[in-house]
Figure (cartoon, rainbow, N blue to C red):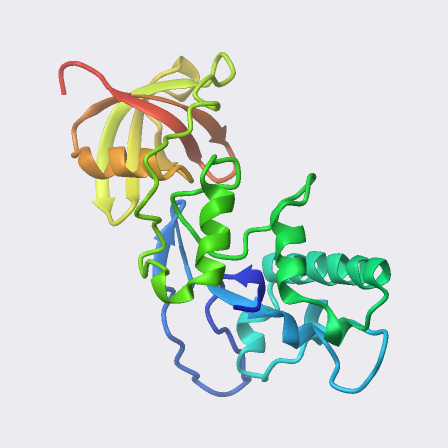
Length: 244
């Protein structure tokens, strides 16, 4: 599989004077609706005939329809990282971009010491997870085994290293279930947020499972970070309190 970058934005086009129906955003994660994740192949960065050149950003080989999903900045950053890594490997190996081993490029991106790049979308395996690299490589080599829900079935290790969060970032309150991954939270503490209704969101799969098992009226103690402009708490850990 030639994946060298990820995207997850839905196909988005704007034509003045036309009503152009779009497929709705299909996956809710981290409190927001997003498009179905997709991978981008190395070939879209490599010109067919020009030597010594790699394209990136919005210049990749893509149809005008697919461009509606690949043009967004998260995808563009991944493409740029892949192009830069490919250029460095071509210099080291003294080869043209079209002759570079995609496997070499994938391994370099996955094992980059500063910013390892995910090439397969796995919701329950963040890059710091001890099993992340193994399953990234496995699904690149065996795409037919990729789990359609994006959750790696073999992950039994739960990350613990971020359980300790900064003092003062503990919240108490009552949950309000509104819909799929849509969690309101009536804050009772700390005092400066008392009676405010905030949104609970998380990027941790084990916390999402916990939230999914809670019901409206449950009293929770939450560890996380409050975003005042967005009025949400990014939850790192939670526990049920008595009396719910």
